[in-house]
Length: 592
Image (cartoon, rainbow, N blue to C red):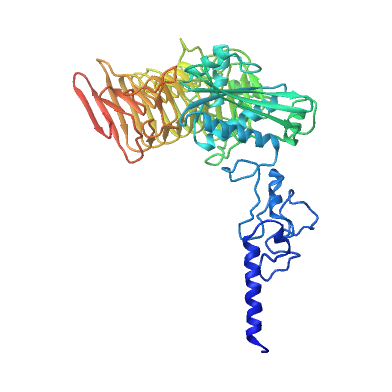
């Protein structure tokens, strides 16, 4: 080797130049090689692109100055080729890992960050309405605000389906401009601390977004976010899909579904479809009429619904027949069945088993009877079925979704949501000997009642919870579950009760005890959350003014000295039984 010392000096100098190039920003980098052994023209870690392409589209070869990466926030798609000192940055909030690529989405994300900074953490909020002349745009902004709030985990958010449930019942106006008085009344109804509302107004060729936070307790504005924006691609698509002035259709919703058409999504059943005799007919009304004429003992009949339909109330009662099973399911995609008049959509008589299978939604309406009345038979809900939107009078009614007058209800899946009644917004178990409700899976959520937002169990009856979720229901007593006093039994063997709200006692579960009570409560597994352990998502007792009430049993309330304020997890057992005359027996992890 000729002159090795000189050659070593040249290598050392080259190394120093390379290090300087890797640790310095700005235009001086242009002439430096940033990745050893790779030519400047096509670094291995960068998508090939002509040098002439601006850095505002995507990171280019190292000849583009690093400082230019902040020019266009939404379009950066790959990391810079160097060791990390020149990573591209965007104008989207730095706290969010994923960059967004539309000005409307960026504005909504910024509004959510503003709310996070100006509303106390742990608050319960209602995202009420966005006033706009484009309906799809309003819904899109609401959905994104809900999704951000849920994912950021700073607040507990009232389910949109609960708003839908009280809109007709309480005569609240939710579209267009909502008066502050109505907004505050809605907030108090749900025990929320903050109401979020806003507007999206056209100003010439631009739009102005306003998002406002209103304190329920003080009626003062907690903060207001304003932003002007150009007409973006997403905004254009939303306007066109609403039949307004601009172009195309592709909004995607990431938040929990606010309407019946999106909550009842198709879902694969937990087991293969039930086999039986296909019922003939052009529509559901004809098929039900065929059953009335032709159903016979010891047979299973399959009723497929091929389109969204309206029907008159129907009674599964076949005199002289025994052991008859009727399965109702949607063909191909979800089908919605509504009532053409008031009444129980389906009454399940003696010796009949009625099964809601996949792809079927039963949709009620305001001022109606229970959607499904069990009168001597058995009702089963399987995966992919939904009971929604049945709003009964909150003063005199039992069972918004399902009323077990006589018989049994087996919930193996599906969803009961957005219903209301005085007793049992979702499910009511009547005081007839032998009635039972067994919940193995599924969701009971977003229902409203005075007693038992999710489930109300009356005297002499049994509720067994083997799994599933009872969440985000609201009541005066027993946000999730209300147990009446005389020989009622609640066995919780698994499942989750969380996010429910009571205005008086028992955020998760309330047990009514009095002088002649004989109650039997047993929790061996599963979870019942409590506000004292989980202020954001736990069951809570909160009055109409939004005040948290202590010693009321956020998780479970039985008596003043038998209550649970903290979360009872899968490993914590709870039991309570007896009567005043024979003495109360309690065991397990009660807080008091």
